[in-house]
Image (cartoon, rainbow, N blue to C red; front, side, top):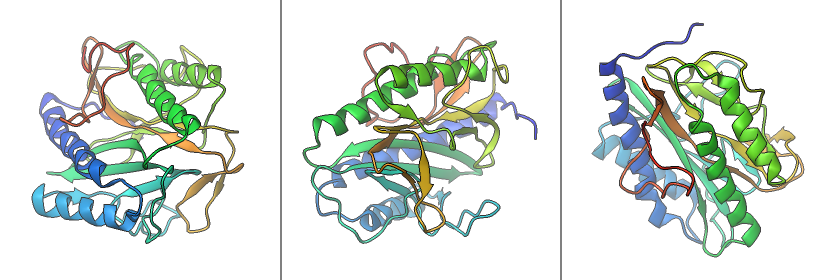
Length: 270
């Protein structure tokens, strides 16, 4: 399958879908507190996407080959859950960390983003993991420009993460995105610089490193979707959708409530 190059009109449509996805996270943030269930967060998100944004929650009934349909409208990955956690009636506790992953379809185009939230008063280690994973995503974004290679992105993330004594999950990666939820290319969060596909203007993809406090090995959670750390250590993930511009990158999944940029990042587009 080839990598699709988006036109200016395509990218403008994706800006809308991506902004809407980020705005769902803005909405959910104040609700992430001890005692709330991830089912309640899913309900709030679903109602807003469908009734207010007049859009479609992409995860609901999403069924890639070999999987059963995903039963909810968002993914909620708590503590040792790496990705694809299914919302449930289990309340969040003080000190939990949770990744909320939102994908919205608007006018046929997908916008995909996720953020980490610390529930109540998190531990120093948990807050450090979330903050460093956010930095790792941006280390990858900064490598995006025409002529760079996908391996440059992965290497920047892996080098930063491992220098902090953390580990990068290798079985799941970022992906091209557009009219389809998952397109080519795959965006590995590890690798060697100067390898893999060359970046060209109009390519749109997600960068979404999954970082474990312990070892990188994973295991399946038993429900057909949930992936957890094998050693039960905490895991964090952040995700943005980006487009390769003529001179660098533009982050599409931004909204009024997006977190501040790391100190080493000066712009969301260049």
